[in-house]
Image 1 (cartoon, rainbow, N blue to C red):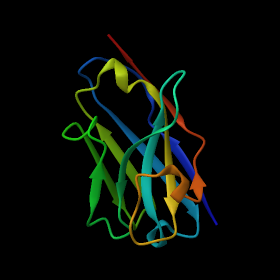
Image 2: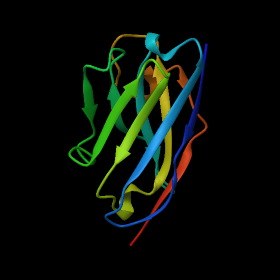
Image 3: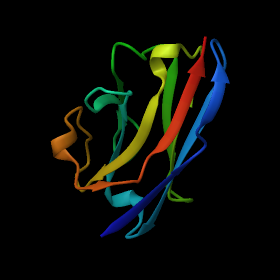
Image 4: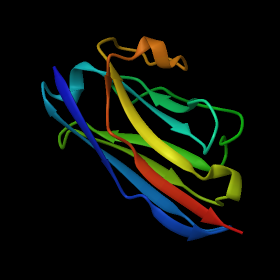
Length: 124
């Protein structure tokens, strides 16, 4: 079992940056690949990025590639999402998720554990 808690959300202007954090407790996050997903207002949850258990492999949705960076610090049981050049369409509740395998996935159904989400709002 692992518990996930996101933080770092807030209100930012277009072009600004935010850094989301996801703290893992319970079993250490070194046994899990991690992902970030988001749910825009009135829309389905969508994939953002994922990172392998070791941190050596990262993947991104086309919509955020080149602007967002996923990283992890296994010693601190933390996963991060650095979001740059933010756009109004990035407004969403952001969730981190964990799956007990070496590699992550872009499919939400592949993840066993989820955080409660953090709201990010990008104003135009």
